[in-house]
Length: 318
Image (cartoon, rainbow, N blue to C red):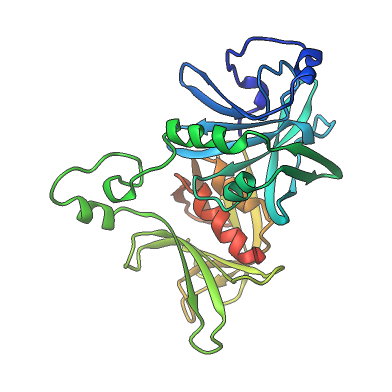
């Protein structure tokens, strides 16, 4: 994620003292290709929060006032309370010089947090032992303008997964054959319990590379993940690591072999909504999955943030 100090909004500098003389309110800032929503107007170094437009991706919310005084990156639960509604998210931090580690989360245009912010008077944020409250004065009007000028809403009926536009006859066929992230919710045929499912593959086919399921709307629910990678000549339920690799690091998840007796063949594991796999899928351009040192399967994490956030909320009971 981007550090807040990398932003250059072109706002006229003013002292913190001058900012304090006015009643603080949210405002829209634009500079060349940058569109951002700030919790202040001409506030100099006293920015409390920034919602940064990322073109056709989810926006990035950086909470500077909740920064942690540390040089080491942090990940963990972030609690946001607005108008009596509580939202639990998983945040990563970006380091910003004298400010410290700033918690950041992606927000899609249809995130349920946004209408809560528009209806509330203030926002209370809790992260890594830090709790702060900021005013939402002016948020609604400024956000509506942000929503209008930020191209983060995409017409999925006329674009492919890689963002290219599809015109004319055959557009639906192209979309149906394009692999994508898919989120569904259904009832268990035996118990009737609600199940949330996240997968990457081609809709309405068995061409699936990754699946994750959980009992929906049950806080603390376990998430069962399955990567359709080659585990080699190993027996059912044999212990094996699911290796998740990016250009920068490697993540190993303890799992077991699935030979296809009860589900797809590959490697399955049980993890929590807070597991670093989810943030890896959201921020990496490409993730490679493999069983131990077996052949890798490239999984483009393109535009995964909104679907993963919704899936994790369903699994966390929110």
